[in-house]
Image (cartoon, rainbow, N blue to C red; front, top):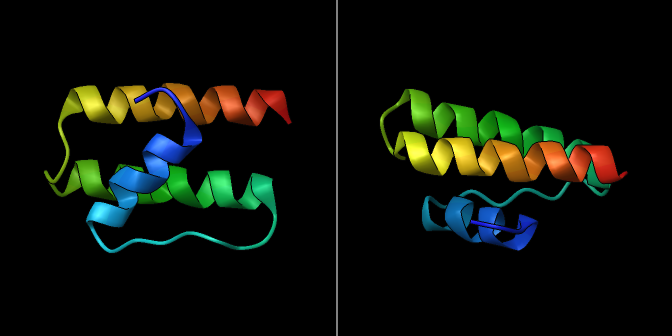
Length: 62
């Protein structure tokens, strides 16, 4: 997982589509959804960590 699109694809596998219309808000909501998936045991620790790294990088780029 290396891009925001990869995270969107991961979320899509679980029927989660995030579009608020504001990029920063979208990133925050994606982070929340990724945390929920991890806490419920639906994604691995590796997927969780990679997703957070990508999301944090995206937050810092804006």
